[in-house]
Length: 498
Image (cartoon, rainbow, N blue to C red; front, side, top):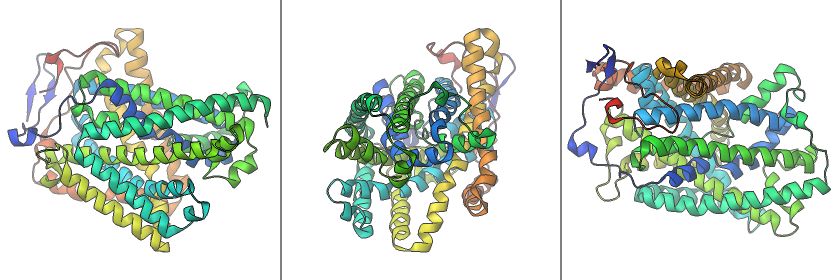
C-alpha cells in the first residue's frame, strides 16, 4: 500500500506485521560501543591482513598502501550512506529494506539476496582457516592435516552458531572478548613493527606509496582496487543489528563509520610495515602466514604465536558476525513475505531467528566438510569464494545509491550535506559499480558464472513471491520525508516512514 505525504510525495508503507511477528528480536540491548566492536569484527582486520597481504603485494607491490587508501575513501562513503539510511529506518534487513523503499523492491530483494549468498559462501571459506590457524598454535604438522583442520574448523563454527542462537547480548560479549584481544594485539604489534622497521628496514618508507606513481598504469590501479575492496567487507553487520541496538538511528550507522576508520588505520599501518620490513619474495613464500613472520621478526620467540592468536580470534569472530548478517537478513526478508515464513521464526526465550540460524548453519557445514574431502567440490568452492566480490559490489553500490536518491533534495542545503549526503555516498556507489564491471572480465568465465549464477537463483523466490503479490513488492518508492541535517542530528519521529 502507499499514501500521499504532506507535500504530495509518495511514501512507502508495508502491511503491518502482526503482534506475534513483531515480538522477536530484542530491542535496545546493544550499545554504541557494541556496534563499533561488531563493525571491526565484521571486517576481521587480522584475518584480512594475514589472508590478503600477499595477494595485494603481488598485484601492486609498494603501491599496496595506496590501494587501501583509494578503496578506503569510497568505502567510507558507503558507511556514511548506511548511517543516513539507518536514521530513516531501523531494519535488520539493512540494504535489502532501504534499497527496496527508495529505488525499487526488486533491487531491494537482490541486495538482500546478494548479502545472503556472499555471506554463506564466506562462512564456508572462513571455517577452514579457523581450524588451521588454531592448530598452528600447537603444531605445524597438525595444521597441515586436512582431517584435523576440518574437524576443528567445524567445531569453531558450531560454537559460533550456538552463541548466535543464544542471544545477541551473549554474542556481543563474545565479540568484546575476541575482538578486544585481537585489536589490542594488533595495536601493540603495530607499534613494535614501526619501531623495528625503522631500524631494520628492507625498503625505506616513501610518501609515494600513497600516491599513483607506484601503480603500473591504470591496469595496476584496477588490480589493487579489486583486492583492496574486500579487506573492508563486513563492517555493515552493525546495521543488520540496528533493531537490537539502543538509539539505533544514531548508534548503528556511526558504529559502522568508526569501525571502518579503525580497520583502515590497521590495514594501512600493517601494509606499510610489511613493505618496509619484509622482502616481497618472503611475503609470497609465507602468503598465508605473513603476520606470524612479522611477529617473529619484531618480537623473537613469542611474537609469531601472539599474532597467530590474533588471526585465530579474528577468523572466529568474523564467522560469528557473518552468521548474524545472514540470519538477520533472512529474518527481515521473511517478515515482509519475500522468503518462506519459517526464516522469520524467533525463539521465544532467546529472541533470535533460530530456524534461519539452523538452516544456514546446516548448509554451510555440509558445504565446508564436503569441500574439504572432495577435491572437485573444493575447486568449485574456491571459485565461488572468488566470486563473492561481485555480490558484495552489488549490494554496497545499490545501498549507497539509495542514500543519494533518498536525500537528494537536501544535498545542497549546506557544504557539509554536499560532501556527506552527496559526494561521498555517490563516490562509494560509483566505485563499487566500477569494481563490479571491472571484475567480470578479470575473474574469468567460471567465476563469473558462479557469482552471477548464485544471484540468478534468487530469481526463484523473487518471481514466486512477486506473483503472490507480497506487500513488499506492492510498495511505491519512498521519495519524501527525508531527514535533513548532518551526521549528528537526529531524525524527528514524524520523519520516519509509515
